[in-house]
Length: 381
Image (cartoon, rainbow, N blue to C red; front, side, top):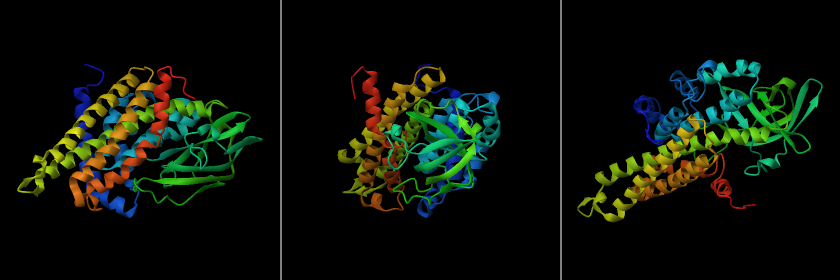
């Protein structure tokens, strides 16, 4: 088997997740989007399917370290609803993964059972109002006061941070000169304020908030990993997240392709289906090429991860191509649908709004090009 072909087991798993997504998510996605509703009950159902534990080892309650399986699940859920796709991706990549990678046995025993089962969600507080791509510009600070850490500052655009399911938030903070560490803050800790949900362009059913820390005090043993290595730890975790975001983008491309083929065969104009016109057929053909190319990049990167290889370059290439292709695919799909695609009742209108953030979250396209260029040996500043 080549590194980008899925095994029969993964294809069988795809069918299971697709059936779940079409039965439990697709009929409600438009309503959740319109009402800006985060369906907490769906998280538990995804947990029952074992989705949150897929890339983690059996001995901690995971699904055997199957990162490729996680990408399949995110792709299929993202194919019907990007909001629920990012909920799963962020819960695993940004929430659970850091605790698995760097948590102490006590931390893991406290939080992982519920997180892996989908009974709770974790978030990662990295981005700030003035520190996004330049994560080293973090201004949130934490200092030791006896047996506690005291945290002051603010975080922005934090996924899975404000629902009743949120149990813990990993927060990056300056803990000394040229030193950024990560500290676990349980939900509901005094001094932590969860701001009202954002009014976003897309991902309306995803739970996203700003966070404010004002004298927020947690025990010293809530330090995650080594002191002073918080930023480095996060960047290592982020590589896997970029592959998963690329899988989410792949699901969006495939959804746009399916919707466009169906509409081009059904919609009649000038005496026949519009799909017979090259001006419609050729862009749809381009989407098929995008889907196949994104598939190869995503699952090659996932295979490298599952084999224990270095994924930095593969992850950056997968995210760069798949997310930019997803934005293009939604534009094409909207054009194919014409005026119908500009109406909110059309699924492609939701896809169009959801797509742009894919080029931004977990490393912008510019950051991916920076990584790829440096991997080529270019002296990029």
